[in-house]
Length: 115
Image (cartoon, rainbow, N blue to C red):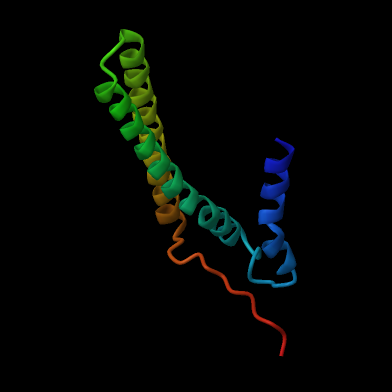
């Protein structure tokens, strides 16, 4: 748990290093854009992991013929992976709605160095 918190904190170091840039966090729209730029790739990765988990549960359900316990475990695994995939797609839809309502199209902000 401590390592996870450590890695999350260190993932924001590039944003802190560019803290002198007035464009990065100048208004609410840029802050929301920064958060959405951070969350969008995570949603794709988690959706891919959920699909992988679904196929793992499917393989477990189909290939293990021996016991009812393994069938039930595979079906449970598939059900929860579908629920996770639904949640990820819902979050992606909410983020798209938020971007559309706030008028955020391209949220990439490159800081400029002083001349």
